[in-house]
Image (cartoon, rainbow over all chains, first blue to last red; front, side, top):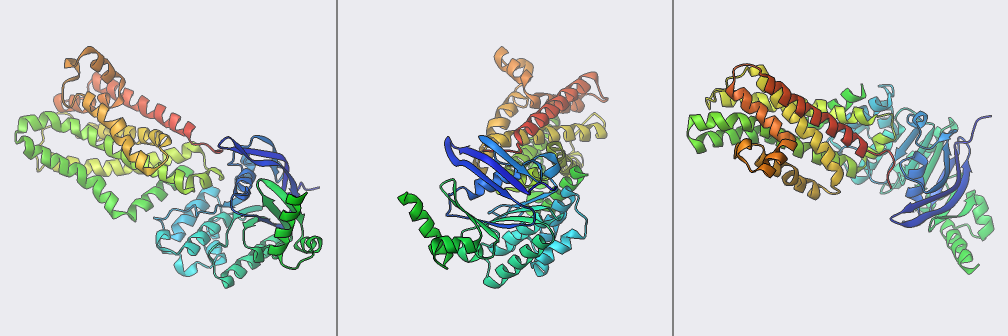
Length: 239
Length: 241
């Protein structure tokens, strides 16, 4: 039997002397599209950093594709794109991707493929520093897609994009998932949540709810996910 | 292979940045020209000139690498690379290869101008001059990589240059011969790598061949470079807080 894509057990992370993740537990099966939602500062980014293995964790285990997070066999299998575009602003889109591709040992044809997938074909020879914020973050997203990783961890990949582009990207995410890629995507926009198969709602370093958008609607008795989120929070605070 | 990919990437960044390349080559050349005419005394220029050929590549590579690697730390590109199979040594050697090539270009231009137009007299062989300048540049680069770990902003990184470079420049024998300093200063100067880098150039200016002292000095410079690179590698962390 194949191991699950992600298995987090009792994950605690301390930053600046303060505990920011308070013992998280969850499992993600392969090929799932999981939305990580919550207000800024709730621990989404810290959790994602722990999944790709760049975060020092205080206790607990994080297993990815059957290996400890960040371990050697995972370094070509996990694609990570941070909230701030981590690309060289003084190189062109293509030069950036060619470099990251050769570091990953990805086939040369991958560069054009990922440029096409994020819709930057016209900007491919433009220096990243001269691109708009949204284009820049798409260049960074493209770098995460290089080498067709089995797990994609994407921190707010659609911020600042026009709705049409956002839709294109989500179509691509689902196409990748249909081919077996697991995606964990953070967002603070509720209309994106509906596009996920499963939602993890986070607040103050805890997972408040974990389920399908449909289940969340039923439990809270509202169709509006934003409203649903509010109801979950107030319910928690009352109890 | 990842080393070469990294070196190629850094050179591509420099290709897009004509201004930096211009400064890298133009500033030391201009300094040599100024020095020649400020002294206006060929004998003094022959004495000081070779030493500066050792100081310039060191100081400039220090600044460029310390700011460059700091930028990788702050923009998240280093973190991205640390999630890939990129080895820490691949990363550092990539910088060494790219900036080593830049140093060669810099030295070639500065030497050409100094030896022809400015009439600098150097007794040692040309290849040895280039080699010593290259080793000095690599030393600056290695210390710059290490120093970047102590800065959190580019503002701080720029301040590291006077902190790391100026005391060494004062004590390396450029202003007062090292054996004429007080004991404490002389001992301190014995501990600093730039002293050996400059001693090497001085030796080449004076003697016609490659002396045993020169080989020893360059061995020391190389040892400092390797130690700083290894220490620099230790400051690149895959996991951070």
